[in-house]
Image (cartoon, rainbow over all chains, first blue to last red; front, side, top):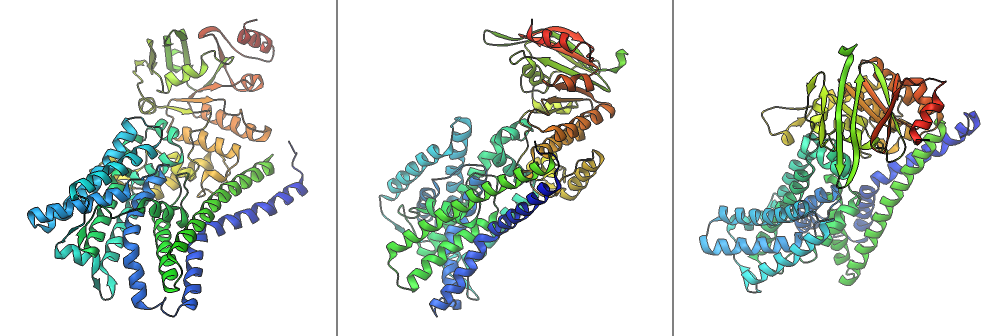
Length: 341
Length: 249
């Protein structure tokens, strides 16, 4: 062990602060990239930064945003929810069927929300109490089951017709701002409050940070895990209301690849795929970034296939940033320890 | 003298299938005293402390705390009884701050009519209390509001020991607290252990370092193959005796 050599200590101080600087840069990275993207695109296309187009982006991003916020909670606990897309499709179908049968707006909305939460509850309960090693498999299974159920119930076709209130929430605008934006903002505020100021939120971070320690500290880990899957399912149900409203229909074909979009949003936004780190802003920034990339590439008449490639590249960059962050933290820790010896 | 006994274990036996991990072990931990728990790997030290801290349950025998026979069925039971454990892997959450780590699983929150999970955190109170404890124990951290991910091994160990000291009202168990540390950081942690003792806790210390045993411990209990093979007052002169008790030579 090096004894306290002042020169050595000075040599260590410098890189530690440089590393800290890099770490802070990484933490504001996603939002900086989003801003840079917006500035670049507004120069590239005169239509990009118009109120009409912004309103468009918000409306197009609303579904991904809401579902990504639920996905984010699951990823915080080191999990993954692959079922959100099928879950959303099933919710729109059950909602459409209930509307056909009853004509009740309230019942239709409640059905969609309950359907989403129920699939989420199945995910969480089977994962935790079935003692599965990872939620990947159960949510992959419910992806298939929910899709199949939706196709079966709807006979493979879209079911047209949604009550006026749902069409308003999903498709109309208030003072030029899409109504769905207010839903997203409301859900975001609610989750933010729960995650940051309530005991439950603290437990989510603890479970994601170190599951074994959470058990030893007496945190009800199983309940916390199940709750995140239920909320992820509920968010899919809210997304179902928005999408059914925008399209005036329920369809088993909705939500295709939504699981990948939402996971991508969370990662691109800067939350850690390894769990325990991130907040609701990351999911939102990521969702908006996906929306902006899609919208801009449309405006610039870029081939739709290229959009997939672009988003894939962004995902790789975001994950590498996460790896880099973990590495830099390790370096900072080693340098500090060396300085103390 | 007998009044000072806080934790008393009588004839504890624990089996894992056919393996007899603890065989009829009895020991006392006294207020203001460090009890060293020694033994080679597999001697039963970890099993014994896991039984005291509620991770395992003893099959036979009884645990008495302040003269009252107490059933310890879970980590929560142990903590409710005033027993805190610093595990070897620290059980710290890297992504949380020291204050958040201190209160993990026992957050200060209200109002009390809400279900526990939906109560609002009293963050400032927890931060202040943590800061006060870290100052009292002279634990120096780069930043008290940064996550423990960025702290050195010694700082993390200090946070874990400090956490135990906040909630320990009777017994603190430390499982090899200096195993992964350099000399200076070990020194700091040993000072913390001494302070916990001076504050009136019964401290149970597991270690392989005989220097630390002679320095801190008033008594040493040696386990071998699940049995208690000796209990002596460690000193510079009987270190050799201790070592041969441990290895059974």
